[in-house]
Image (cartoon, rainbow, N blue to C red; front, side):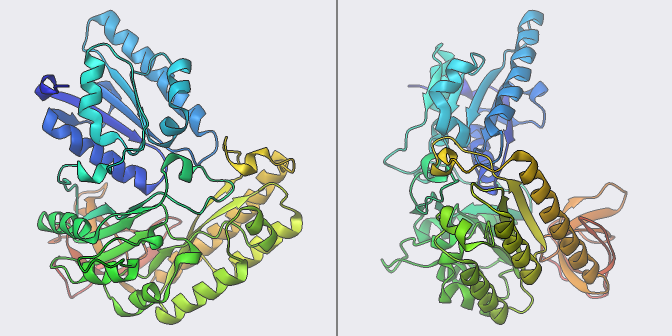
Length: 455
């Protein structure tokens, strides 16, 4: 089907929910549409096409999407009544994958539904829509979308780079294996080619993405399966690489080669997101996490032995079916013992189609709320203490955006803390040593140190 009609100038607004993989997918959708005349805009009011890039992990994810769809339908009706340009409404991502046909039935305003493995076919879908068809494309293609995506466009000095997708772990609360499919690792040669392209356009920090990123086992140039640790070592050797990160990891997949990378590769930032979900072995077993709390502790100990400056973030679910006061106390004990500088914590919410959703041992909402408040208070104290401990240190900061005040830039420390600096003579994309002079709940304040390091 021809897509010639798409070459006229149009605008697209992509609203992303959820994980960093969705953020990456949103940028790649924009890349797919750009050659067909679509310019990205920051408001749905200015858009000819709005794509809601959805996440199915968090509580009430579907309801949030339907609420947004209601607002878009009203906006489209107003446009049509005033004779202004029409609006095409698309839903992408994991909610679309899980509920595609049902979404079309429930929300007639939707024009297109596409899963996370099919957005490389957006131009063809838009051509079908232009002929009057309501489009649903949630297949898992035999060939991967990465084989069809155009060259990635850069949008700053830091960029996401997907190396792995899908998950074979089948945690009992999670829909990812059903919406993203089984684990797939990109060939190393393809990853290196995309990385070189990003570096050539000024990127200095690469964040490697995957639903289970440290299960990476892509085919290397030597024909053998490479681990994530080996891939990181190869990327660190590319000209222009200043910083490397990876997310999201599973404790079972932290192997010797990855631990060695934290020890030996200066470009690998000393910050790791390692979800544990619970500190109770009984709940971890019910979650089908396939590791114990002590296994997690041992992994953390080995990582910290390799990289003493390492700081951790994690994910926690409270109120999982069957969770008792003792189980929750075990989670609090693990948090107290381990120490986290950041965390994502949520009340358990049933995801349709997952084993945990059918459990008869659901926890009362009031109990979930009380436990979540207690956990978040502890995590908040740890984050604030870590930020406060940064005062007096000198941190290499990668500046990535303008601040709110004249002459101010905002950057990220090695630990992803936002750092606000009056940065005369420094440009976005530079890495400069910053003396931290004040700490706030979610950010740091600093001044440029004497020595400066240009990116």
